[in-house]
Length: 189
Image (tube, rainbow, N blue to C red; front, side, top):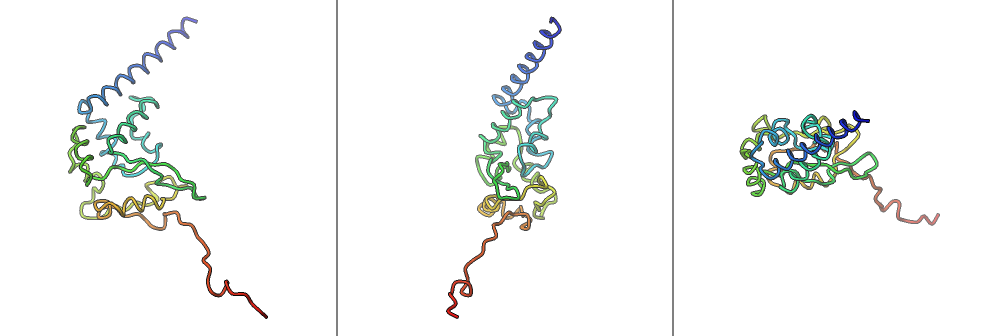
């Protein structure tokens, strides 16, 4: 019984320490710019699901609840944009995250608050300077397709449009039969 209580206390204490660490990161984001760089820059994340983001946040430092808090913080700062960027084979929307556009002034200000240089952030989108970053099937779960919302997001942002290109064969489209004159007329024979 005593071992069980010690184990429970130890777990509660570890969770509390993680809570304090995440709270400190959010209240004083410049205090640990290496964590933010690990998520936003070092792994060259551009687009992905929650699972992909979880892989970017070290599990030895943060539990699941703490990871959610960190991601929510980045979304609130527009450094990540949450949306239905993916679809499954049936067209069901799947939520994902895309990095905030470097052209957005709020993104630049919020990056500075985290101790991240905007030029370093831009380079993380495309480490092969002067060539568009090609987003293809290697960047996503193989059972997902990109949604048309993602394509619209990229096309509506000049910086994204100039620096990112999506493999169009991986965008979910609905095949519809359109009425033609040959199948709309009645035969009188």
